[in-house]
Amino acid sequence: MFVPEVLSESCSTRQALERLASKWRVLLVYALMAGPQRHSELRRRVEGISAKVLTETLRDMESDGLVERRVLKSTPPQHVEYALTELGKTLEAPLAAICAWAARSH
Image 1 (tube, helix red, strand yellow):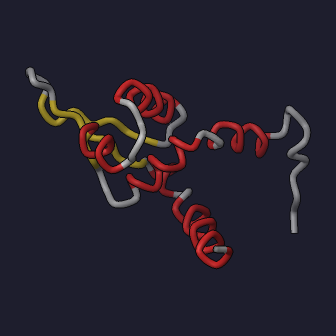
Image 2 (image 1 turned 135 degrees about the vertical axis):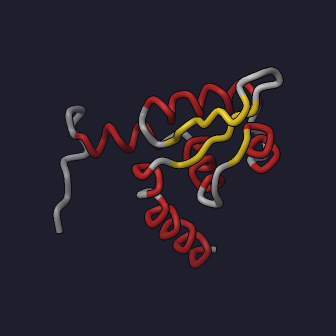
Image 3 (image 1 turned 120 degrees about the horizontal axis):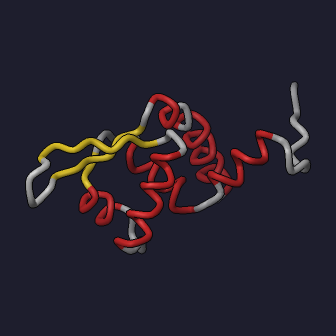
């Protein structure tokens, strides 16, 4: 089994772990596994996240290629939804494994 040198700052695995370490990112990936959703839907589903933090986190995830933003209606009031990209969808299996581990451990 390959084990990357995650303790090294230059390790790409470490860099990926640091990007995903935010609890909001993981929770948003988990929420978006159900399919595309609007900002207001995500805010209701992910308890405790503020509108500002949600917006910032979605922007960061979009720039990392994990989430795509789709404009459904461009005239005010604008309608936008967010969905996992193909890259974002690759996180489903690892997150499912973590959820299964947590369920077994408690």
